[in-house]
Length: 231
Image (cartoon, rainbow, N blue to C red; front, side, top):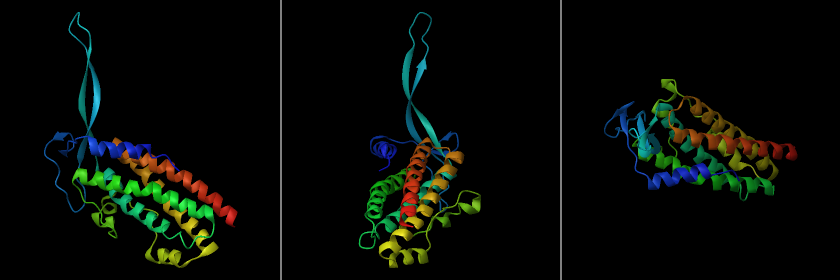
């Protein structure tokens, strides 16, 4: 199973730390009002240690201060889109029991469910903390105009027809189709994570994206190996 230390840290921060927000980049103010496009810019507090030199003859001292951590539109769009992306992965994994024939496929589906179910809670909590829209199950966050504004789009999602085809498959046919579809699904998440690491501003989102990128890339390699064995 892939490492979830970053997500555990994020979950602890959400529970234990107080967060400050900014209404505009570089300007301290009240919490941003949510918008239909989820385009608010916010800041989350993170403690940093600053060394302050003393006066002549006096020692230096350390002061712990709260440093603002900015979120830009790409950060918010990534979290908003990754939430339904993970939910669909959970929906796909839930199809495996009773349909999969290969025990390795069943085990993989269980690992995906165990990894991504907690991530759904973290993603929703991050959005709620910022006061922006949290996509509901079945809702397409594309309506928030991310792609229309030149930002990254959600990638790797299965269509309704593809999900129905997967649900209708059994045995070896299900195993092959599940692996093929999940590889594509994971590849979309990896691309989205790489994009936000280049263009986002939030360190918290960058850490989450790195965790998604590393964990799902490893699972892609594992699934491609399983596909070669099945063929």
